Image (cartoon, rainbow, N blue to C red; front, side):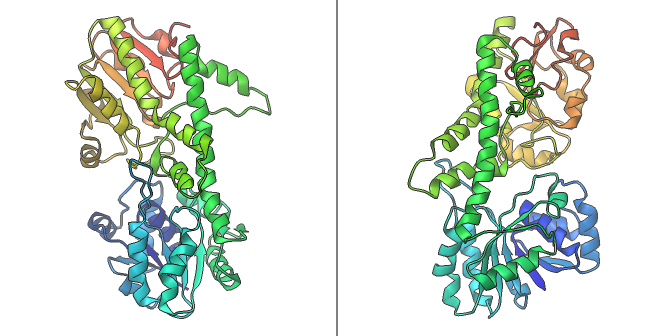
Length: 436
């Protein structure tokens, strides 16, 4: 079995590594020069625990090769498409990458080849692509859709532990797809149709988005009532089997930010809850920035001048360097909308500062002590372990008098009461932190 993975972003590269680590011959196709340059020195272009050592081994032993051209894998038997399906500002899905790959792949198809779509797509797209493009080759093909459902930061573990959703356009396709993914796990869930498998991925992520959206709504309610949402949620969940409410916080990333929109584009009816949950999560930064600025203004009678964002990646735990879908972008935009003269700086131990500069438009300071110096307002944007282990007393010694720490994750709510009176601390949904 020789597998060509087309698209070496997060999904494609971790899958390639997992398969090649099982001694499958894998060739990756990627047009991004920066990704290829990283692989040329046996490294991923993003942080994923344990990935670089595996890449070093599989590249050295020849199990995994890579290039820009599908033609370099023209004699392969399996092709897995993992290119991106971004959503624009209107919620419309861009399918250009998939269309382009299929049009190029068309030139190399042979009888017996297996084509698997793993990118997140709207329901019906796999069959549509086959009917419009791939079937025109005249080759007898096996077609499948097998969604990726791993958690960033744990992909290598989950690729071999999570059930794999399997679907095919016919029985022979299902057999061929199953034989491939059996290499990773024997826990296969075979769906009745391509469309059913496509829907599985969309509802998994949309449900997760809704789950966090409700927690954020509780935070808004608690702020309005001057209560601690963390106290309320903890009590609601304690030994109560019918309650599993999440903690509030920023909800973004390359999947949750777009999959409710892809789900909506799949159907004629409007999925009310799904889109309301997404809208609620997207409103978080506007709400929080407005709240923090009013709080700061009430204390200091002026707007904050130096603002620091701790945690730039879309999440901190599990650790990742991924800026796609990070709400730090919305955070910056909302800060500028209120005070365009503010100096905004960032810090993240996992993120490349050139990438953050290009994506967020702010200066990332690698020295933690330096970035805090003379800060007026600090946002703890993600829950990286680096920020959960901070010594707030030490932080207080570096910032300006009257500084406000706004902690989206309530990482330090238990210790905020011991802060010196020159520093104020609040967390999302707990405006009374340090005073309750």
